[in-house]
Amino acid sequence: MKVIAVATQKGGVGKTSTTVNLGAGLALAGARVLVVDLDPQAQAGTALGVNLVGEDQLARSLGWVLQARLQGMRMDAESVWFDRSELLGEFEDAGTLHLLACEESTMTAAQDLIHKKGYQSTPVLRRMLVELADRFDYVVIDTPPAVSSLSATALAAADYVITVCVPEYPALKGAAATRGTVAYVKDRTGGECDPQYLGAVLNRSNPPSKWKAQEVNIRNGLLDAGLAPFQTDVRTDNRISDSFPYGVPSVLRFASHPPGKMYGELMTQILTRMSQPEEKWELPERIEGEAAGV
Image (tube, rainbow, N blue to C red):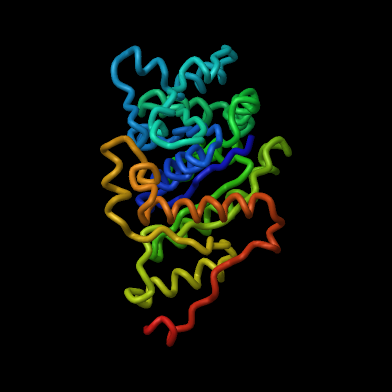
């Protein structure tokens, strides 16, 4: 089982859409996938058709599970996860898709408890996921868009970390900060957790004919900052955001259209990097001003 955290310190860049489309894409390709919603905003759950309302539903919040474990009580993830494999019903040879959903108040309480107990408590999610190693091939974690005890918990749980950037200067700074944070996890957890930074996804990009100076600078900035951008970026496409209220990721709703193809190519590159040393990763070429028409 491989655990991938999608993280950034800048909100509004498409972190959740990257998480759910990557998770659904892996399941579409035949893998057993668990999506973990660690963001109190609970957007990943909504994107997969799950909203926790009412007492019965709140009892299935990942926030409750984390609180219980932090207080020494045994609570298994299997008792609260949602099976969303029905979303794959029309695809042959698909795998399975499960979700650990959350809700704001319970996840915020879990965040406060992790903070209170200190950094030694941040491996709580990783320890829980290790128990599921024979149930899933991949776990994809959606993380809060800020420095917090929950984001630290997500990074500690991960084997690999992907960051997300859009063609705007503040997003580049947030992506760079995320990579720097990953480097400290091993030391802060006494060697128990050692995530590997895997690269940056450029989201909501434009076709080359519409590149302006800022987008060219961001693309080059990803290379200059050592953020290892993937060769495939996710271009602006209303079908991606329009899929959100349907509770079905665009990689499934539009599998044979550009959203499905883009996320499919990105998924392939992610899996390739996971099997290679960093020096063998293929990166996009640096863009010269004249070539970009700026």
